[in-house]
Image (cartoon, rainbow, N blue to C red; front, side):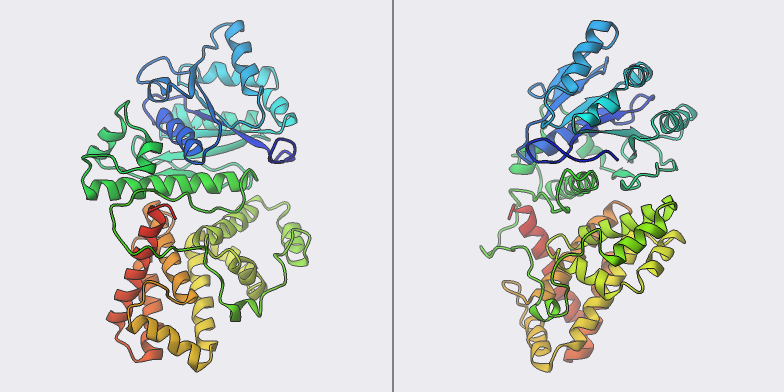
Length: 448
């Protein structure tokens, strides 16, 4: 990947190219989500619409999207000049199936990606996949022609049938997943008057509570993947969730802040986050330099930790330090078929169970007392972390990153630990942890 330099933030700015050689696979939906993700983040954003049939991106987002035509030289010059004019503004291009071949022919002929990278702009091709021969062949051709480009398959489960396509060998996540959405909700978001960013920031009138909850969960999962994507491009810091505003849930005014790692845990933590030049990371980089599959597994494993512990980031370097002798074995498990998020969930669970067991009796009793008293207002940090991870696993479950009921297994395992230590029933411990998980979810959705 290109060196990240320049710009107001000192980071490369993403240029998202949403494309497919096939029609009706969800290109405009992905483009809308990317633009409105930037709106929610209060960033400048510009979009360019190469579609030639409606409803187009410009119909949904007329304030941000400009209709472009690359059918002649003048139109081509206008578009590609605009794409590199302001290097600090993320851009989104919705490439229609009819413009697909011509667009990439021009990109290759004028060495556009190379010029963009020289200007600290990182092009990212988001290819919506489907099982047609045309799609598979086009994806393979892009990989051959743009070997140094960031190419990411998008699995749109709303419009496209599942299709297995090998990702490129970059350090990006293996795919971007858009979960299935019910028919009534799909009809809602297909309305040209519907805005994801407005929905995110306020409760629309007339939407039933269950519909509101389902759509917010769907949108939250997609937006968090965008966070991961920007993290992998080094445009963003480690992923932290954009939180949903306007939950219908009414609670006390207690605010969930980023979770402080328990002081006793930090006693054993390294003094600073390990840099890329530290011995463990140096050896891993050397061993994986020519093994792209292992390098991709290593990266996805680390992204999973940031996902699961997004409000307890200090635990990530501590986990790497604690299990540095076992890290290569974790990566081997992933290469053999274990899902990275499941492996990370198991490692975090083992760590927290060992941490709880190593506490002195007084501190263990404080945690047990919080469970028995159903303390949801100000629970100990260890319990907050467990609630956060449970909710993150739930989100990962919605996106097929972990097995079905993985969240339930996590809660049950942690409930068993507390039940055995404190003489409580497993049912009471489980009920408390579920309440804690829902509490964390609701506060996140309220925008804290």
